Image (cartoon, rainbow, N blue to C red; front, side):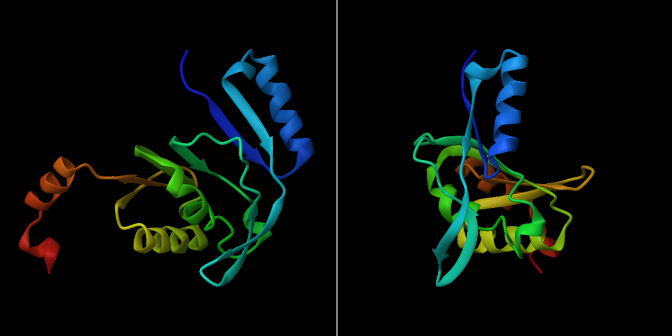
Amino acid sequence: GRGHVYSIEHLPDFADKTRQELARHGLAAYATVLTAPLVRHDIKNEVWLWYTVPTLLPDEIDLLVIDGPPATTGHLVRYPAGPLLFKHLSPYATVFLDDAFRSDEQEIVDRWVLEFPEYHRQVKETQRGCAILRKETQEEVLRRCNSLSIADVA
């Protein structure tokens, strides 16, 4: 009974279908589907096509699931989610990136880990792979460092 899901869609018809399905299943009060056209964003002196960042998003995001825009939109098309949304993540947020077995998504995660070193990654075996990023607590960092062997460091 707590929490709220925000979904960003660039295609109005798909956003409407999603809203209809939420209503049909009695979940409309728990989710907001925002229509956000793809626009150009200047990030680190490169131009990227990604969603208009809606002003209706919460100040702190606890769970970020990235499954769009579609790969056919362009090279590394999901990369802007990091620079545009990670600053809105709560201290204990988790990020899921779908399709993590694709080379573009692997490169995106590599970039994010370099640009946001406070996040560490895991990849879960799913049909198309799922990259998971989250900040480590100080306790987790110490536990991980204490469990490293010489072979892990070399």
